[in-house]
Amino acid sequence: PRSTAHGVDGDLLLGGVPLTQFAARFGTPCYLLDELTVRQHCRDYRSALPDVEIAYAGKSMISRGVLRWIAEEGLSLDVCSAGELAVARSIGFPAARILFHGNVKTPEDLKAAIGYGVDRIVVDSLDEIEQLGSLARYPQNVLIRVTPGVDGHTHKAIATGVEDQKFGFSLASGAALAAVGRVLAQPSLRLVGLHCHIGSQVSRVASFEEATRRMIGLLAALQIKYGITLPQLDLGGGHAVPYRPGDPDFDLRGYADRLLRAVNYECSSYRLPLPRLTIEPGRAIVASAGVTLYRVITVKHGLSRTFVAVDGGMSDNPRPSLYGARYSVRPFGRRFSPATRPCTVVGRHCEAGDLLAEDVALPVDLRCGDLLAVPCTGAYHHSLASNYNMVGRPPVVSVRDGNARLLVRRETEDDLLARDLG
Ligand code: LLP
Image (cartoon, rainbow, N blue to C red; front, top):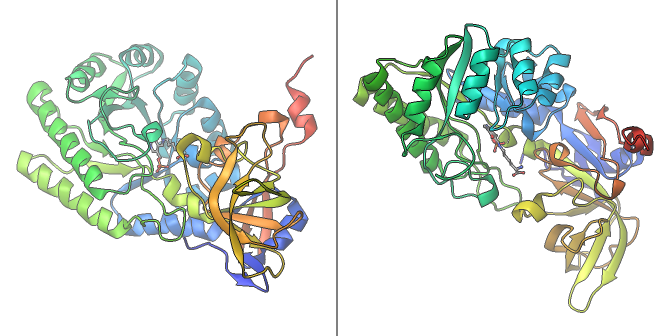
């Protein structure tokens, strides 16, 4: 991860700023985001796949500041709720570059999407096709979400390509073919392509290739069954990132190469014109740009383990409890003993499962008041955060060229009480 801080005198730096300065100025816990790393990842995608539309998956980390960077870097945007769309709309993110997703779109979601004029709505059920058909005005561009039956070999909570799950229309059962007929029957809808997303934190390029082959097979089947040639194919996101040193990296150039080869080969064997491709990376754009800072509140010795308890936890990072995610933890802010012991870093919430990192080596002299940095927290941290135990959510601070900027302020007790009408 490019933004991982490096040490000077026991301190660590991000974007040229010592982490101790962020902790002093913004408090802990605190999410940091390195702007240039996010921008660099956008550029990496655009240069690896110059003819492919890169749509940032806003669910991974959404704030106005971040969406401005995404817009400036020329990426498109994938949103999945009226709320995410409201953030995009508030900064004037071009509607022509927005896709609207989701297996459940309420009438409010659909109206918001139509009202802002988002370019494409990715339909996910027959009910939605009917509803959208009656709400939309021609020509509302539509993609159909297909479940291609491909296993991304990822955690089951984030595997979305296999059969028998809530997303999309099954390819194998013929539901996807039937959905095409239903969209074509809606005069207000213009079917422009197909979409699939096989899962998240997927590291096997072969899974993406297989999904691509199957989707192009379906494009060919549509030519035969309906006599239509759809111009677009959206292959979703899900590219894995290494969370800890030594985790496998996702080879973007290799992926790009193999994806384009698969598309070219399949299209030429079916004699199909090349569709315009879209991909939707979220995590790969923002994860490694993020670092979360915590303060140690206590160090407790259990029978066989040492617990390091910090001032955050599953409310700012539920990923270890939800997906068994593993993180590395780096103490900073002073010189520590080189001797370490295995520790479990736990949070402040009232459940035993509230862990941030298990079995990490931390200095034997770590104590109350010390600071810890957890790298690779830019994706699905701020966006997954909760107010469990009425704990306010941390601020998001961006850094660029040695300057820190508060993107999202810390949630206060007044914020927490504001919706409670007594
Ligand atoms: N496109 C669609 C339609 C999606 O549903 C998702 C993620 C993406 C793109 C972006 O996937 P990415 O490139 O970020 O992997 N909360 C989980 C991840 C849930 C992903 C949901 N959909 C986590 O923290 O691992």
